[in-house]
Amino acid sequence: MAIRESCGVFGVWSPHKDYKAAYAVYNGLVSLQHRGQDCCGICVQKDKKLQVETGLGLVSDVFGKERLDSMPGTVAIGHVRYPTTGSGEIKNAQPVLMSCTRNDFAFAFNGNIANYPALRKGLMAKGLTFMSDSEMELMGMLYSIALNKKDNIYDASKEVMEQLDGSYSLLFMDADGNLYASRDPQGFKPFCVGKDSKGNVFFSSESCALEALGVKEFRDLKPGEVLKVSREKGLHGKQAVEPKRITHCMFEFLYFARADSVIEGRLNNDVRKRLGEALARMHPVKADYVVPVPDSGRNFALGYSRASGIPYEEGLMKNRYIYRTFIMPEQEMREKAVRAKLNPVRQIIDGKKIVLVEDSIVRGTTLTAIVQLLRNAGAKEVHVRVGCPPVIAPCYMGMDFPTYKELAAANYSVEEIRKMIGADTLGYTDLKALEEAIGLDGKLCMACLTGDYPLKHKPAKDAQIRCC
Ligand code: SF4
Image (tube, rainbow, N blue to C red; front, side, top):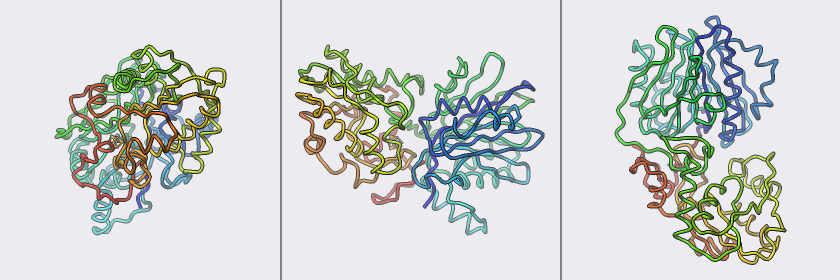
């Protein structure tokens, strides 16, 4: 089984000799920490050498001042990894070093390669040996082969992109201090580029990390685009492959990316509020308060409250020092974490009719525990409203969804799920409301809601999930 490689990537290139790129990447990764907390790594370039440092856990635990000071250089890339398969193993940390006859490279990516098994088998048949099950190693090998044949990065990227089927926002750098970024031709994962007022160039999985570093001007990489930053030419690039079908992951807008990130010109906060308003129109109810599941349901709940006129209340307090529940690797850990991280505010909840708003239902276990918490705190009625339409299929493009067996909406009707989670009523948005709220003219992946995968290699229903 391939190792899942999800995650966040961040990179910087500076024209200034005294610039400390490792510090900038550190700060960028801290802003992307929500995209993965299993392990992290930073690579810097100095004196024609690449230095990679990695560690298990949070960025702030792995990198202290002493370690960052031992990483001089003006160009760097970094990675935070999502804990799914191969959780807690340092060998899965990125960036990954690769050599080809022309140069040494370090790679980091966010995504999932759907045709990984076939591509790996093909390379092994040609006599190549793999040291790991990592998709990053496969992509690094494909780039090494392509770079040995092609005399520029764009032709090499085209050759690699034409072989890959799946999602990838890829950052890499060479030992000469050139920095490269490419986004898959379908644009599944968010990926943006920006420049600060001093001419430093940044790449990030999400715009929130660019803004944290004072970058005011940024844009999304185009699907199929490859960018390079070099001393000779600064930031430049090319469309390596023309997209045939653009399929941005709708779940990034709704849940995975931060609410203050802008993807394809849309502030996630706004998308989520619009869905909350749609929920209020589609599933009205008489209640005393609209209460979000913090933090993921907050923007949806604001939208619901504004559209319905029902007051918004923070009826659940969150312990901020516990990881996001959805992102934790094991089921048992997930359930215990719900109780440890949420405290219902009895003074708000007791004797009241509550509209509880959440971004999505995947397994349903988290919501079951939360509804019970509200009832224990004296809620008279609990009406659950969900911003994302029912999730009926796994994701093979990089989101850590469970199999069909575990997905609530793949196995039960809305009424059955309502009973299961113990709510008085339950209402979801639908595909139309979702498309209207994001507004990208259908250029969305919604495979987990429809079962229709926008891939060349269609996964079998019982295919193993290898998401990043
Ligand atoms: S299947 Fe769902 S989670 Fe996966 S890429 Fe598509 S929209 Fe995103």
